[in-house]
Image 1 (cartoon, one colour):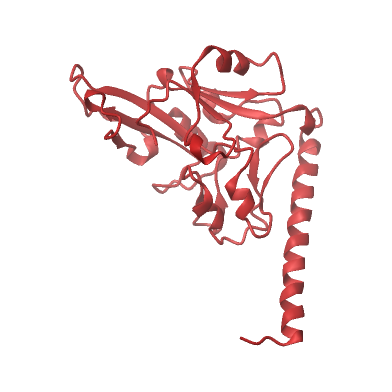
Image 2: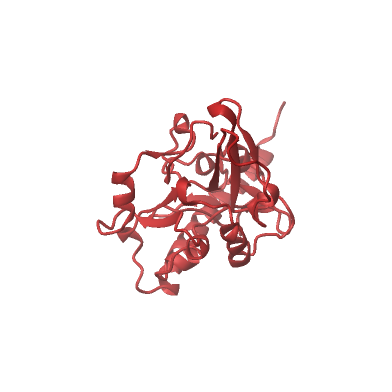
Length: 254
């Protein structure tokens, strides 16, 4: 296929404009946060997330709070965070039964009889805010990026809706917002944490199963959580540098 010089320069120019726009978007978004939160210094923080499986009761408070706080579409199957229920009969971790009605939005109706010898537990899931994020690597215009404090964010102003990041995420944590046709996912309630608040899901969890943690703060309770428990991450073989740390994660969880 032949392409003349004029068409080549035209297409190259579009790429330069998109790349420059993405860089400006990144700069303006990052620069704008300290303005909204003048006491917040990006370089002083490195955010992670702790989830204690043994404390999760599947109430759905976190899912409802997230949808309300972040204006997530109310239709089914759009979630920034969701909860899955695992039923592992006879300890057979290779063949668990997993359900997540409406992402756990309304809680979980009774389904299994107690005393049947099976293991039952709930697994909250959300963006893992990876240190080596596949979604960041594949975004062609830099609309998905990692902030200096370790949060993976999406600038919808420059998102093309190409879905590359949705396909690249090994945790299924991204979706295309049907209203804007741009990528969306958990932002760790960035608009809250830069003002000294915790995430909406952590604030509403009645058992403390979820905890936001600042890994740069030596006094943050997340360090005790990491030291005193057998910590695992989802799909460690992907080597994404996931920062969602689980205690009590069963081998049946994928």
